[in-house]
Image (cartoon, rainbow, N blue to C red):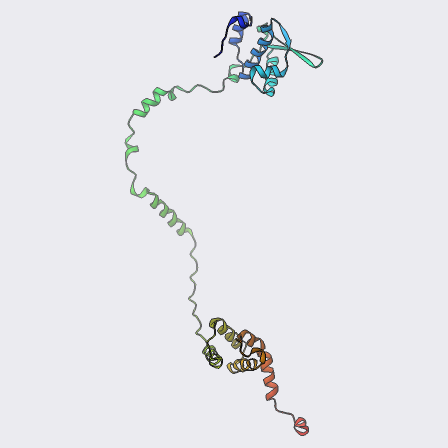
Length: 265
């Protein structure tokens, strides 16, 4: 609890100066700084004194940037005087308040008073009045959110250009030769293919390359007769890879000898 007693010290300021300060329009920072200046001068029975920014900070609890700006504004209003002697600056209050040029009222009032229409009594009265009939009638069914969304969607679909209809694609029937080759190879190896669809695609690829089922089966039999593929699963992709060499060997084996070869043979 603060113990304020005149015996602890007073600040003798002329009543006329205090009344002039009461009438002047100052910002919050300017008012705190000028009263700090009065405390450091008249409070010590001085008309001027050298006051550091740290003393202003302790008295006003303001940042020194705000203090420096407030001192400059007060000096522009001719409410204080500032004299620099070397590194020290002395401040004094301008007692001749007729020379003051404080801020106008518009520059110090931050918030305008509320209009009469916004007073508590008026708000309470307006809140107690019943709402008009138009505000209590139920909304029509057509204004529901679902209807609005449907309307927007219908408008969007109406303006969206129609996509050209795609002709139904007829799927080509399976090639019976593929089934023939697959059944023949499964019978020869004695078990079904683990990846039937994948192996069937390789057979179909060979047929598209104009190889006959007999050539595919013959190439498979030739590769299976080799020691490397005995007892192993022979992938049909390997068969397709060797089809060209197999067919070429067949053509060489079935070629009729020329007359010279027949005589010399």
